[in-house]
Image 1 (cartoon, helix red, strand yellow):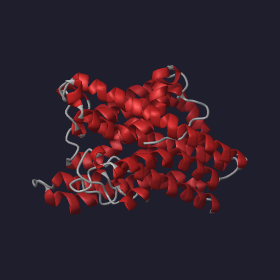
Image 2 (cartoon, rainbow, N blue to C red; image 1 turned 180 degrees about the vertical axis):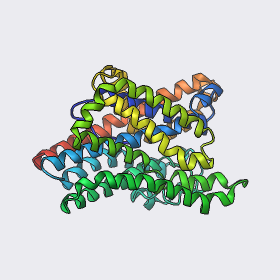
Image 3 (tube, one colour; image 1 turned 120 degrees about the vertical axis):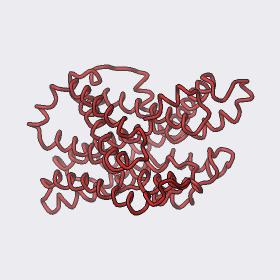
Image 4 (cartoon, rainbow, N blue to C red; image 1 turned 90 degrees about the horizontal axis):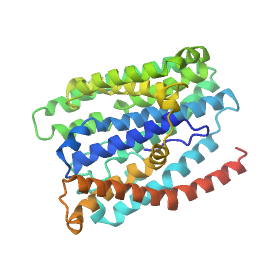
Length: 373
């Protein structure tokens, strides 16, 4: 998962990005690889780290676009230049590795190449035949969001209906319940009790764009309030720490609701509850005076900077690390193996950041200067 760069760095967002990638890493480690039993228990709710990334992406992208609306308007060329140079280079490198080196694959097979290149891999994704690099699904949803949301905003601005943004967000948020209820009823519930149930659940609920917009919408809503409703913003900001506490309570409720994430209640109501919990967490993190806003950590900042590269490469690195565990003379499900895998993943992400991400970011900055941005 990738997030826009932050010009005036908000340290609270560094903590959230770092937490999100650590949570996802632990979840995938416990779910897909040999792991110590306590780690599996700790990471049980780690799949929601992706929802936190969605909330962060919705907030940051919308904030940048809303600021443009209030000043110079939406500059599509600048917007898409930023996104392309931030996302595509390192993504293509990982994609190339997956297709050129079958031994790097953590599962049996990849989706067709065109689905990765068009960011439609999440649509119709069947884990039985396309389980390798399945975590690209979340990037596909974000790319679809990056494509459509600016266009939607442009239409609202052009038609002088930007004040309808809150109504539109509410409609989209409520529509998520309808989409999930429909797909559950028609495409998932008929397979309850069969061996194929989980595959249909992932295909029609977990990976489907229309069922996973809650986090993005929550982030956009927070950005809209902060940019267009300064009176409400001033009322919210003094309560940063209280919002952090509320977020923990909401996420605790979501944890128990989603104890079986494939259940009807979790599928229909769990995703929005998780998104609201992480939305409260985000609000607390961006409120001056809150604990997360004021606490600075070089380690968390570095992990946040590497989060996209970690997300893309971690399954390859963990797979290869465990395949070579015999050379380390350690058990695959040991804490030592976990430490090796963690260190190796961060190291590879750092190399990708130095060799791929930073050079292309420099090229991007040169292009942006030529555009007068």
